[in-house]
Image 1 (cartoon, rainbow, N blue to C red):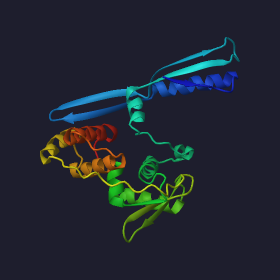
Image 2: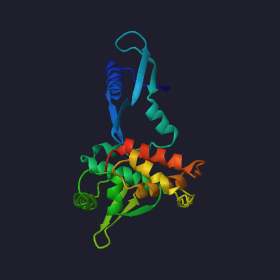
Image 3: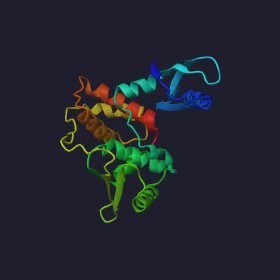
Image 4: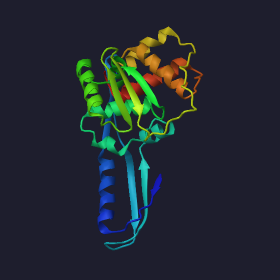
Length: 241
């Protein structure tokens, strides 16, 4: 549960709060997982319920607003899988621009800069389009220079993209880069990984998993089981590549 306080008490502000909660409760996310000849489809909302209490009357003072998060959102917050976004993120018109910002926010974060190849960015994006169109979108972003928080530079000779912190995200100068986790993993587990994340390169997922473990300083007691859960969660969020 979360308690929200509202400073303004005009009728229009109360109405806006109701409409915002309606939008959140009406937002649904649906994922599917294919295993062999079976498919599992799950649906969930951002919030499960909300309650408002206020003084009676058009301009009645709001006493409290209670919101119950869905299990999916709560678990994402608990496992630090939710990132804050710049307000101008919602002004980005193209979905691919939003996805590129999300990648920069995750991997560059508060660092001064982060560099990656177009190929890697394309795979991380989970884009349904072609790598050629994705590269064109990168070029447009670099030329327009309108991505929030990060400046985008594209080098066509090396096919590398550099994201530079504009300063709106305070640079973490003292934090060293996290090293990928290097523990052992039974090679037989890759067959199970392909079943829970169909279409994805399991070795690419392994690299992502190891980097995630390193960033979060996690040494799993059962690496194979942890890796499968990671692949399953990856597919739930992104679907097929």
